[in-house]
Image (tube, rainbow, N blue to C red; front, side):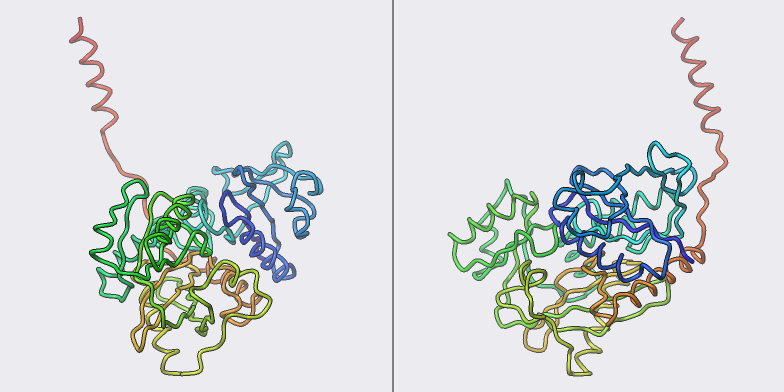
Length: 363
């Protein structure tokens, strides 16, 4: 039975959504793997406890968690260990990443897992960092000739409205460039609304993205698993939203907001573009591509390197999705070419000699 390190929570405004994803995955695969759940608190501390699957404890973790214990990563031995119980270690076959937002989707957790030598289910540090930054994603996809919505990016303390209005006209959508779950996003029809949207967005990021707001648009999601030359595509789903797919519609709506795409031709077009995006951005593991459609024209909206619920709803079944993701990740990391980190050099000897020479020169 595979050993899975499940990481969720996080020091991020998307912490609550990360907890939901973590719990959904935890419950879906409890009989499939030997799982060690690690909750990252709002201060960045790593914890495990006996009742991690109880959603009620996260309102006040340290008061309600049963026997919470701090967790550390042992980089030398590719494992995690429980503080004050150094003999209690867990050596995972794979890390199942359920961290949305900062310190997760931005590549930070990928870097930690890479240093620890633990295979992980999301893109690597570089790919994650690019995908997390909506403007960098737009720049790179434009370079490869893939369609993106017209936009302008500015630092929050250097907003130049003249430059903005030369490129865009109302309505304009304002986004924190590095955030997910539609937090801090607003649609503006005039300058007063624009000023309010800027003030709101810069609470979450000092880099803001302004885009042409497509009013008569259609929105779609499509998930992709990439393992080298092997890939698995989900069925795309169409989003039924009001102005844009908001936080409330994503997570607080009782009725489903997404539906299967009925046109087979459109389904194939969405899948083809999603796969192109994942490959050009050098994604590995699981990602979700969000797309827009105006008339017959498709545009890439953004890429989520840790999609909500790990995109189980797009593949049809969370348990089967996660099992496939875990097993393929383990196989892929075993097959990956091992790079060499050794290089024969006499740099230290030369440096040592130069130090000795400098010592005599001072005399």
